[in-house]
Amino acid sequence: MTRPLSSVDIARRVARDIPDGSYVNLGIGLPTLVADVVGPDKEIVYHSENGILGMGPAPTPGEEDPELINAGKQPVTLLPGGSFFHHTDAFVMMRGGHLDVSVLGAFQVSEAGDLANWATDEAALPPAVGGAMDLAVGAKRVLVVTTHTTRDGRPKLLSRCTYPLTAAAVVDRVYTDLAVLDVCPEGFVVREVAPGVTPDALQAVTGARLRFAPDLTVVHAD
Amino acid sequence: MIDKRVATLAEAVADVADGATVLVGGFGNSGVPVELVHALLEQGARDLTVVTNNAGSGETDIAALIRERRVRRIICSYPRSAGSVWFEQFWHAGEIELELVPQGTLSERMRAAGAGLGGFFTPTGADSLLAEGKEVRVLDGRRQVFERPLPADVALVKADRADRWGNLTYRTAARNFGPTMATAAALTVVQVREFVELGALDPEAVVTPGIFVDRVVQVVV
Image 1 (cartoon, rainbow over the protein chains, first blue to last red):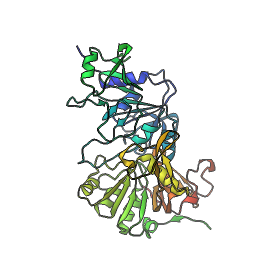
Image 2 (cartoon, one colour):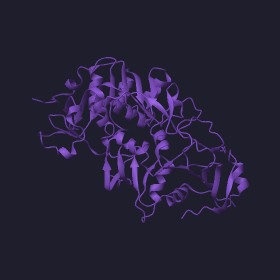
Image 3 (spheres, rainbow over the protein chains, first blue to last red):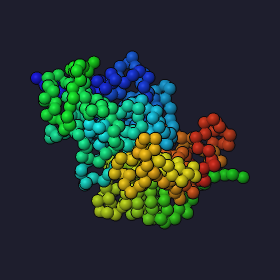
Image 4 (tube, each protein chain N blue to C red):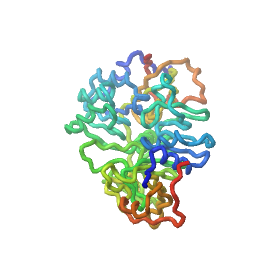
């Protein structure tokens, strides 16, 4: 029986791949769960595009500082060793290749590692981009966290993105509720599958030719 | 004798002209110079180009400027947010122009202006729709798009403490665009929580040296 991974399970799986001592930016939405599940054995320095390093968890209710917010405009705290700096320096860190890991959400990822996560084909909304393009081109490793398909079952991992690109050839690894896949010169290589997911079933919901690692395993969240 | 302190918000924004390009600091609600923007609203300047990260929410500051039809154009990285109803309404009606700029590029364009540079190449957005119509070169094996500086007539900045030389410190993440915007405008106007005596700010800890600042007004909220 297929058991797709929960959001928390995906976050746990991502957290396992982040080395102790990494400088990490977590995108808004699903990626922020990663901070909640990184184990106490690791010291990770979280970066926020509005000028924070050493960002800590949400404050206890009633202790919020309205000026101390993260990129998603939610109140946060600052850990010992943390620092504040201006916006241009925050983006020096992002664009200049200083972040070890960027964890981003996606609408689509292509087998060439192209990322589409800022716009769809929906013309009714005003466009908005934020820091996504800077993160995508700058981080040493770009990890994408996403559902494997859209709500109505359409593939999000494709041979070519149909939505406007955030950046080309930037994604290193994709974590979905069904699998963990690397972007390699030959395209997507599946390293791990969720419990009960067969290669054929995974290929059926993917819009690009999948290759499967010889040592393919089941995803372990812990 | 140098004294950049002004007594009132009205005085701080008195000569902002119609058609001005105005940089407004802030990220979400953090670090927005709300009182200076409201003073600008009262002052009446219109046909403004506003440069800011978000396009306001609710009925205050930038949202109010838009609602009152003072803004012809907004240069911005993320105009949509919870409560950005006035921006969206004007955008849908074709009554406000939007120039969408990736956030890092927005910052760096203002820095380039303040720094006296003619422009720069960046990989950000080089493979996106936002590079359309711009020069793209392959540099060191990467596609990079040429971006021009973004100078302005006025910058409205929120800082924390200032002295009469206009030296500034900030508070937590409210700093954000302030230091860069302060360099990029012909007239930099700042609101602060507190004035201190000259020499009271630790020289090691001044974030914006007063050379970039023209006027400072105290706002106690």
